[in-house]
Length: 609
Image (cartoon, rainbow, N blue to C red; front, side, top):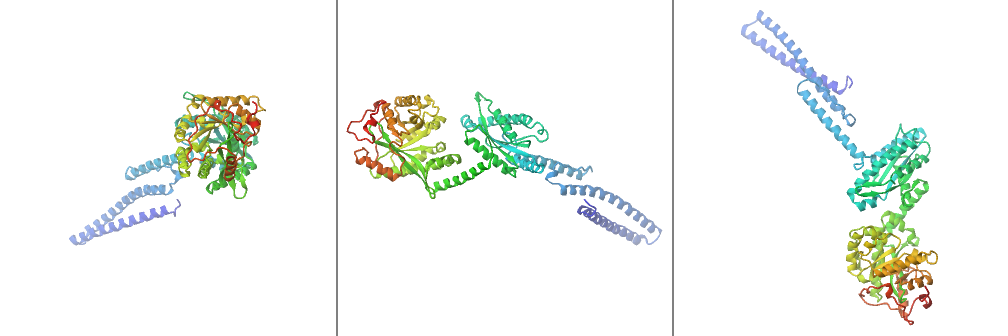
């Protein structure tokens, strides 16, 4: 502090006031003493001696007093100055006062307080900038470091990169082994990544890694990021990412489990792909998203084209969300035909988007975006409700047609799924026997116990359960026999491969035989030619579905379609609550009487194998 600072002024003011007060008090004491002596003994030599002694005493005591004042004021001023200069950057500073009195005790107390504050601030900074699970820098710290490095890179006219890396299959492993094991596996992954980053740094950036090493951070979940400064060429970032990703393909030992993972990576180069840390991280994450959508295990560089796609996806996501809220997604219905009788035995509800400006939009343009954004759940709920209400409307007009709806993985992850199905049936008034749920094989096999727990109450009410896309996944036969299914749906890829792939007939026959052994019906999807229908019928398939019989239709057109066949003699039960059909084996199917009306030609239905 300067000579004319506030502390100096305070020191002079205190000293002046104390001295003045003391001198005034001393003069009063001496004057009182002299007056007393003069009154008692009168003027004389003794008075002069006494006066001289009083002056000497006052002078000596004044010097002693000033010395004591200085000893008290200097430490007090030091404490005051220390308190004024203390801030978050000086929490490590300490005040050194050794007076042996209360001021030294106060100084020690202040030092202990500063020590505790320093430890608390370091802990707060650690919580704010360090990931507590992996002890790596977190997203905030990584963004701050990226901001600083980008400024240095721009000034030096060099390049750097951010690699956003996601651990493939980690979510699946965590859901299988549990949260605790997942956290332990995440710790092993972070250690493996840290070692791989150090090793890759010495390989790819040998000349520059000593000055500024690569920085590894955890962004969120199973997503990590690597900050790469001083690159000679952007392709070095791609090589670096491939080396790090390769390290995760080595097995992990977790208890009795041997786990093989992998990694997808997205790379953004700065300053080209962003002028701030947040912009570069976002660009790298966009590239990572593209790598994951392409099947995982890939390294993708960010491009402006990817950014344009991301903007388009964002617009589409908002439109989908708005469309769900406004009821723009509606069910179209594709007929299912009993291959033994040629009669309509039900339909499948397929979603269509009645867009306000683009008209009717096919699922190929929005299903993928709905899955990626998590909107497939509410979208599936909306279609389920729409299909149930429309089927209930047919029933009220004398047509009992069973309707099947697809269930997405997101819907099935909801623990309230069973309750939602019951609520839809109750509100629509549709009998459970006219409702069918289609669950993909991959969903069914992901957690058979949970699938059984959710589906058993639904099936007990009379709702039929179909396994969709059967034959395309990896079914566990032991689990399969315990699951509550009524129907196998033969995937259309097998049907369309007839006449092209010599293994297709064997696959179809195997599925039909398995269904017969389990008392399941079989629905063959994608039937487009009479030859395909004839083969399926002669091999014992129960039901056919495809463009040969009819395309997906809006509700009014489908109702007219059904009534047209009913008017020509087709048997469409018109009962309020039809009973569920008895279990049927494929071997029980017999050819229809010659006079039975069919929607296919007799030659097609009697076609040779």
